[in-house]
Amino acid sequence: MKDIPNRLECAYCIRNYSHGGECRKDDYSDKGCLAFKADPRGCIRKTNLVLPVPLYMDVPAIDEWTGDRWDINGMNTEVCITHIRKLSWDTKRGYLNIHCRCSYYINEYSEDYVEKKEKPKLKLIK
Image 1 (cartoon, rainbow, N blue to C red):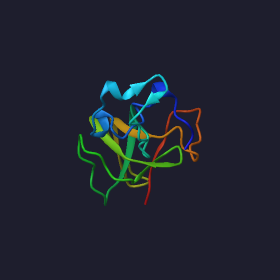
Image 2 (image 1 turned 180 degrees about the horizontal axis):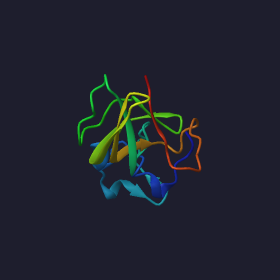
Image 3 (image 1 turned 45 degrees about the vertical axis):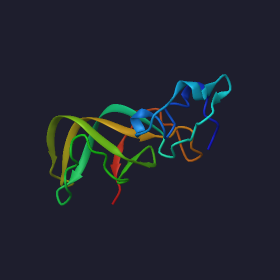
Image 4 (image 1 turned 90 degrees about the vertical axis):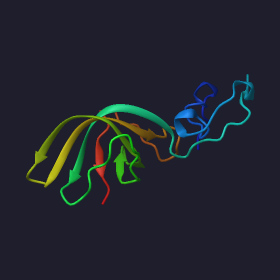
């Protein structure tokens, strides 16, 4: 894993409040956090996505993290739907498209990460 800048350590830390842990500001120094432990999943981002769900698969629950069955920019990730805006059918492929506001994990400091110029495309891993 590449070095994470000091100012971003909290977002990528497994102890971050959004990852289920707690941070104490007295653990932090000018050289970085003394208790920093990198989360291999990365940091949490929020965006509007279209989730393609096959007809035979369960629709993910709202405000619950799904397993590693989604792929963003070539990396496996977990997704949490926070708000559903619209549902539509893709009859050719047999998918229910969920237009929603999502949170997802992304690790930009992983060796496998390749930055894409366009908006992230979500794929279902079978």
